[in-house]
Amino acid sequence: MEKFVVTGGKPLSGEVTISGAKNAAVAIIPAVILCDEPCQIENIPNISDVSLISRILQQLGANVRRINRSSLYIDPTKIRTCNAVTDLVRGMRASYYLLGALLGKYGKAKVALPGGCNFGVRPIDQHLKGFEALGATTQLVDGAIIEAECDNLVGTHVYLDVVSVGATMNIMLAASKAKGQTIIENAAREPHIVDLANFLNSMGADVRGAGTDVIKIRGVEYLHGVTYSIIPDQIEAGTYMCAAAATRGCITVKNITPKHLESISAKLREMGVKITEYDEALKVDATVGPLKRCNIKTMPHPGFPTDCQPQFAALLMSVPGTSIINENVWDNRYQYVSELVRMGAQISVEGRLAIIEGGTPLTAAPVKATDLRAGAAMIIAALEINGTTEISNIQYIERGYEDVVEKFRALGADIKKVYFTGDNEQELGA
Ligand code: EPZ
Image (cartoon, rainbow, N blue to C red; front, side):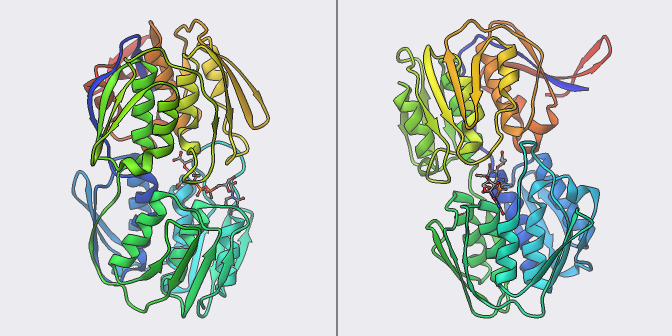
């Protein structure tokens, strides 16, 4: 069993370079299916979710190969099936983008229902509503497979009942080759939605308004091959910013878009962290004085991102006073709380609220990552503690964080990945 072993108690210092955005990559890679020529995608994070979606495209017949560590060549012209019912597909949430891409290109898709992170029911009714409005029929087969089909997709109005990142992107995919104009209202506005729109437009699509809550897509017949570079990962950056604050350190976070981090920077500033913005970097300095408690309410972009909520809980448990988190996006994103409590945190959960009595003494304890961002929170918590913490279930963390051990080590953290077999412990290549 692989684990991270973290000995904390030291402020982080130095520089970290942020990778390409996971949640953009896992949409843009399947979006290449729509293209009528090969594409090259750059600034791809080297994480297991990217390997998984790449292998899924290969199973469909696409030629996918790595040009180098952060670039993929994808030739979708050899795709020979729209049937994506495999364990690989079930293994990742973002495989739902195959529905929009295959439907948009070939008029049919058969896709196993997605798995992925483990925090409760994750419906896709808004995706299906969008496909149906475009003229497709959809049906759930055996409770585990979605089949979608159409003769022609025809542009339409879709009003989303909830602000959904996945539904917004999936409808954009399906509509980009539909006949006429599609208008998505109450669309999500995350940076990766703008990135997907920019990618589609660079291939010759006609998508306007991405980044606002009304997106207009006029279908085109042909999409040409491009070389496209994915945006930096807002949540990876937020995670390192949070870790710097939690250890009362001072770091520079490079290769980012500061505008995408405004809500995170604002909260850290409210807590007393000094943030200095540069064109493509931020300096996060938590050495300037004691930190203050704060409250957080997660919201769709430009609100505070739910994907940084667990990391902030780990930070706030080190700050004296009562902080309240209001999780407003997911119904059940507090499984990690019981792990932090094992470390001495005083956190109680009441429905959507987590009430944190910060500043209590913390001690090392064996903990597990209950999902990707929960895993990031475990690392941050472990870095705060004078002692050695073992974190298990690290496969969740490796789904979404490139070189997490190497990056934290470069910031001075004492973290290693080890393979445990009974009594034996062996360090894996850092
Ligand atoms: C994306 O998930 C991200 N995943 C999630 O990040 C992120 O937490 C989430 O957006 C919100 O920002 C990927 O991009 C792969 P949603 P997604 O559709 O698109 C409800 C991470 O850690 N809803 O915006 O699946 C839903 O239940 C991951 O990187 C419906 O009711 O999220 C939730 O309450 C975890 N019906 C809310 O909307 C639908 O059809 C937002 O979900 C779709 C969603």
